[in-house]
Length: 139
Length: 307
Image 1: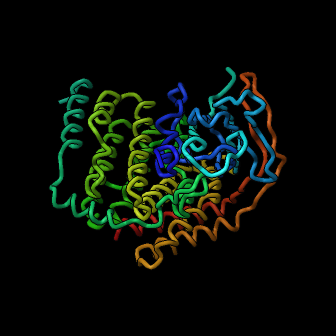
Image 2: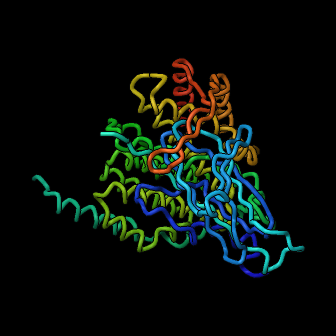
Image 3: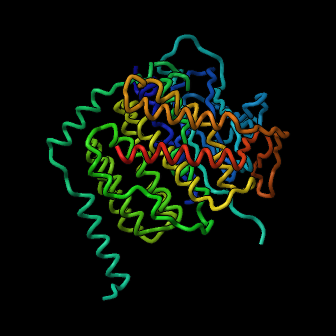
């Protein structure tokens, strides 16, 4: 299989392709992930978001996949906090986390499953997680 | 003779150039690379799609905070820097085997993150050099390339850049080890970094207060210790690991006694359109539990130093 259909070759896709947040204060989080996805596939991973931080979640993916849906949910009860399908499939969202939370990041490549995995229907998706200390507000 | 600041910086830069470009002997590097080439511990990504194609070790590793993610909260807090808490540089020469070298790679990385967070530039440079020397000992010095060294030279007084560079160095090491599928090495680095991070934060607390943000960060680690133990469990046939596992299990037992407070999860939008999350499940640690934890963490960490 070619580069983008091999799971091994998607491993660092987020680090090389996702747009890092312009603010210098944002730091790369080791919870960032990448994986190979087939059109129609959904997959998720846990995210431990520490209180006192802002988190920037940025999506990047190969064009041939079409639209990619990003959902962020509370681990408890899987309540959806953010769904980019309601936000024109936006590729970035920033959250302020006041108290440490266990979240779930779910990725779905929108579209109908088209049979066996092949070069046309499989590609890399990256989720870049960055954090910074929540700025103090007020005077 | 009082050394003027520009000259001091020049001396530091020269020292950095020597420290970072001095190559170790091919024999010692090759031997250590050989050790890690044999470490193909269950990290190979099965050629499946989605996020669940990682090994148990790597999956657990993702959820162990890197040193900066633990310490970033200290920035700007005007805390007293305590040099005496750091592992002395002299410890480096006692690290003669690959396990202790990898463990202390994590430990020194945490010390570096602490120095950077508290804007201790000179000490940060010392600990950069220690991390670099350990990378050389375990055969991964290639992660510290010329552009990285130049960035360190050019940003000696810039805490934001030093934080970026410190964090980037750590993840270059992690990415390299993931590429060569060195699960055991990653596990040692993560364990060392986590333990040292917790040691530094517990000792940075002057007085217990249930609302102290550092105390809360310590309490939050209840969420990660299980992942750490999963990582380590793969290698429990190793006596060095058994000792660490025993210590971590004692720490986990203290966390198990902590109270869990549940409040409603809340979501609001601030004036900039940013989602603000609050409420939910909170780990609460009492003063007694905190002091027990601090003692257990110190005991385990210090036992590794005397080895």
